[in-house]
Amino acid sequence: MSVFNPYLLMSLFYFSIAIVATLGSALVSADFVASVGNLRWLRVHFITLGMLTQAVLGVLPGLVAARAGNRTPRTRWDIWLVYNAGLLGLLVGIPLINEPMMIAGGTLVMIAVALVAWQLRGLKAAGSSGPAQSPGGSSGWFYRVALGYLLLGSFIGTGLWLGWGNWLHLPAPKEVHVHSNLWGFAALLLAGFLLELVPGRDLRQPGWQRSVKAVFWLMVLGALGLAAGPWIENTTIETVGLVAHTVGTVWLLVRWARAQRQRASCALPGALHLVTSYFWLLVAVAMAPLIVFTPARDIAQQIAQQGGPILIYGWLLQFSYGLIPYLFRRSLLPGEPPRLGGNWLSLVAGHLGTGLYIAGLFAVELRPVLHAAGYTLWALSALPIVIDLWQVLRAAQDDIGQRLGEQLGSVP
Ligand code: HEM
Image 1: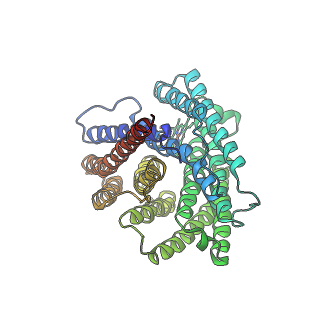
Image 2 (image 1 turned 120 degrees about the vertical axis):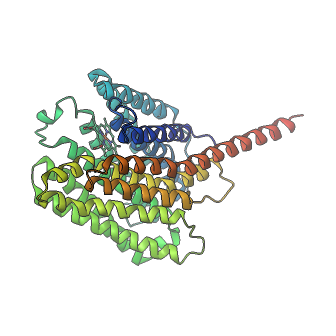
């Protein structure tokens, strides 16, 4: 892969800002400072759009090309520019609720995502025509459909405060946005990355091929039910979608964990970050019936409204702690074997933070202190990862400097 990857630099930049925003949330929860305008939106999207999507758009072409046995394609600076201009537009436009900025930002982000999806299509391994027909095709299909859900989620998200919900006959646009982005985009993407860590020769075994195909369809159709259910106000479709998606996810996780256990190279606590992050996704899923059937409407409403951080910090961020350092090493230090990120501090602090945050949803009187502690632990858990990423960046810079020096030295 290319040694300099501007997406990764920006991803680290937004990750660092996300930690500051998380600490800000701790201060707001503890009532030390007043709530700053739409810190909540910024906090969530620094992580989802700034850190995760940014890194993913930068590395997907290289990953798909590598699986297909092709050379890493050149960095597309044009797409990088379009994406980051769009992101900046949203970061300004959404907190200020400025319509032209929101539309311009959302449109540019969608154009960048569509361009990367188009690029992946061109890189598709010759002859792969389904999710399980070739190992390269398998994770590649997960990525492509994930980007499709990201386009849908971004479209709905851009219109959330512009009243597009009425034109589209969408009674619950925020739910469709969240379901499409989390169960469609993020879940399929992370499943693709899990497959990336399974050796190609294993994936070619008939047992794996059958599982991958089943998991793919369960997750894709499940996400469709979760996005379509609230759109057409059909809870049966939504529930069937949720069940199918969850079965697919658990199936993949069990297979993946078993395969990793047999490999001596399985790195704890990086692998634990990936697998245990799904515990919080399952907790959020298990809370759905509680929200619907609990007699305490007040608590149910609070959980429904404040459940977002459980998925963002508990699931996506915990998974990213293992994933993002892996992508950095693979991309920026091609001479070294890549390894998953995370250590025991990030693992324990991350999970403890999520546990305290959830406890705060139920213990109403202790909520400020529990949420403040939760946000502080989340910020603490991110520190070793950010330090690790800056070190990788520095090592890559030294590497480039050394190679340049060698080249200049060899010029007569
Ligand atoms: C163009 C891209 C996007 C736009 C314009 C956008 C816009 C929005 C808006 C306007 C809200 C409502 C905030 C509120 O009601 O307080 C929201 C919420 C949310 N978005 Fe996005 N979003 C985008 C991408 C994403 C992505 C990629 C993800 C996840 C991978 C995501 C996850 C969420 C979540 C979880 C919430 C709920 C947050 C909460 O309840 O605290 N969004 N988004």
